[in-house]
Length: 383
Image 1 (cartoon, rainbow, N blue to C red):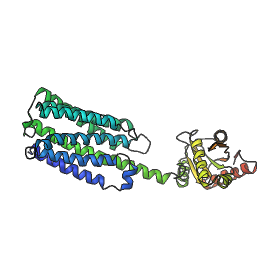
Image 2: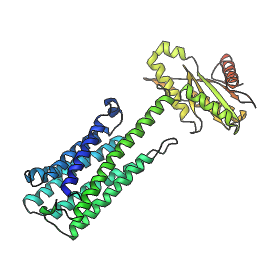
Image 3: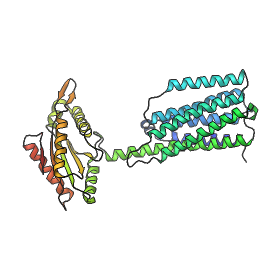
Image 4: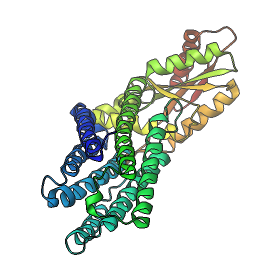
């Protein structure tokens, strides 16, 4: 059976390996996904702290106890800070620093003023367990719940973290119930071997959780880039056409399409510039999206034209939706500096006939759109 010192050195080696894995991620990914830098640095610091712990009795106690404790708590704080960055939460660096400094001062007093090893163990386990508890709660509460995204990496990480919190709690109870001396830190007792083995395994599982969550986030980002228009964040033309094709072949109810075109968009580009034109496109998409349900996907068809898929929607219902969207955009002017510039849409809608393919449906919607434009724009026409 391995002794605690060997287990600690194994933890140091594995933590260093995990740090290298996280640091090996492309810099562009670490910059785009919050938390990656925190977690990679946390594992590096944990590797250093574990190495110092393992050298207890060989190097000065200042390094193997005080510095090691500070570094170990700092690694847990980095894990927690990384979770807040990963989920886009406001950092709590001030409170973290205050808590860590206070804990480290008390542990230092319990080392050099009065040697209270059990108190040091209880304080260390309390602070690290509390930070990990907050981390696990963030992961559980903020895990993705959107359709098509998996929650497994987040649940795996949360379960691992909560188990580590439980181990910290048991260590506090053991320290209070059976006070020990510092000389017993690396003694090959059953409780030490159990603690260091469990803690080492959980530390590696937590770092694996980092990688799983980063990979899931990266996959979601890449999938979003492939399926959405980069400028407006509406669905891409390819994606919307594919969704429409599948809706037609599913044969689960009437399928309607709306083709929407921004009126006089060229004038916006000519008078306000292309940057303002891009802003108008985003403004229109944001305005439309605020009135759409999750099952009503909007895509950029090309230029200033957009396409909206309406599943299980009859012709009369599609007209009502089109009129509502037209009025919504007309009543929400685009603000260019101090100027409120009215933006309007012409909309053509068509509902699939039995046996009609997507190309035929799009042709009728396009013909209706041009009728709306020829009739004076800011109108809805049915094909």
